[in-house]
Length: 366
Image: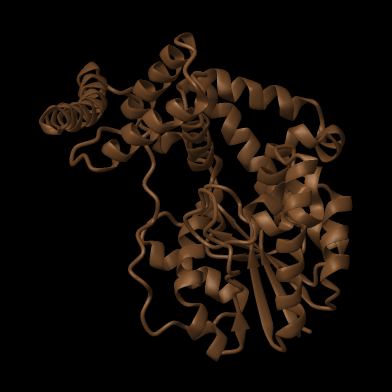
């Protein structure tokens, strides 16, 4: 049985994918140092791009996640058992990473800790300021096919927060604040029995600094060479607006989900290759004071918990005075729209070329 288990539970949009890439690519080096990062044989099925342990956790926690059906949970039971067997067979430290664990309620936290059957479970939370997390979450919202404005998205979050912490802790659908209120997240896991909870502040750049802070929190050895993995790059303000408008038009056209996903992927991949992309998404002016209040409230309460903060706690503080005030220009939006059009036009032309030549070959056949 593992002598110690380290659970990295996110948060979402805090560099988790970058860290998981590093852990996956370094799993052999880590194993030589006594730390097991399980990479299960079936990790690459579906749409995953990096090995993590979210899907196996569905086999244990199932519909505790609002997006997981009973059928999906049943399908992941073998994956969970395989992961548990890895934990049982390793004599040293086992490191598991699944950002979805940040949203689960107290009873599910207890169920997981009981299933792991370890007397030493440390929890590592990676976190960014709300001023950086919420724009990234809204971008993901748009990338998933929505067309909600950023202001409306923040309004929904404000309504959820206003429901009160008791309801947030118990309503599965209010999972965003269950994760992103750091002081309550830290308390939830420590009160359930975690032996130590660490909060790693995400500095942004360079990503190597995030890795060093994470390695310190997780008790990992220094890697001689950090794998050349780039941190994820989000969309700019102009690109997000273009994609949002595309989503609205796609919805009006009643496209299939598969075709809509394909178009969004083509466009977002093209956006990533642009040299001049415009300014980043920022908090709307009318929401900045509210976010500053939320941020100060949470960080004050976090310092009253037993959580260990690795890094500078001011990395987590939202500072409205540092925001850009100007929205994306008409030229930036137009350039992003043109790039999206070109990406789709090039694919259409390639397909037309193949179709034309196919017809020519068929005419030549006897």
